[in-house]
Length: 346
Image (cartoon, rainbow, N blue to C red; front, side):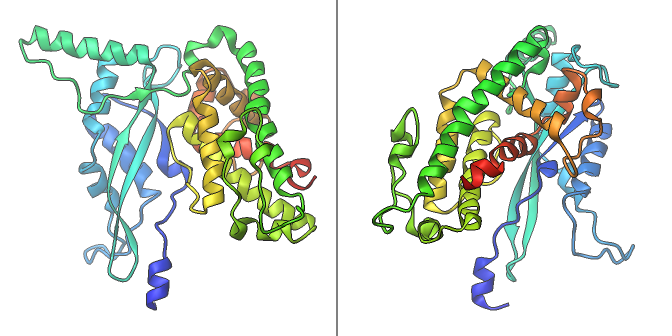
């Protein structure tokens, strides 16, 4: 490998299924570790051969045994008690477990996973309940109460708290998706696709509504050169697709706090930040309604490799929505709606 190839080799991007998985969390640490090992083994493979077995070394054992966050998760689950709204096999302890990977790099340019840490999210009410239970236990045992070093983050999709208003929230969410996400970024894409009198000075400042200042910088000539020098529908679709992808990644990061990829191109960074800033203006209830609408669209329109285990008419709210929820599904749902032919080339 020459020096240029070495420098260009980018850090691997793991699939969404490696960053989040719904798990029925047991109270026993060993049983929980076994579930985590099975999960990580699907995502991290070693090239080093174990001389005793002749098979690749099982990195998942080392990674999980040394992982941060496991004690905190188990402590929270015990103190918060079962999530009674969810009918899981483990008394309602089904959570979306998040995995964060720390990367290292070898001298030949190869990337490897140094460590992994785990976390969960929960409703603010249950976080407070767990903290109170921990404090009461400390008092009972006459111990100084110390809060856990890493409490769960608020659950971005608290579906179990909104069962009575399911249909109302779903319809409101559809309106919000169109108003705040689809219409504004499609307007940006259409403005960018026009041939200006001076193609070396493309601008989309006035394409974003209702707040054009959110997208104030000029579009990069490197990114949008093709779009301003060609009338081909394929070129229009290609550039808009990149724009939509960056915007959707920003939206999902704003909604969930999880990253599905951040663009490096300056113009696409603007689209990414536009997505994030749009979400910041929304209320927590609106963020939930939007996610519900995106999950509902995915449920009805999923084909091929979406990975759902149930047919569209078999989903039960909120259980199956919670189990199927993850950042990658939300992003795919939004991009599928943005990827319609009319949005890409008209």
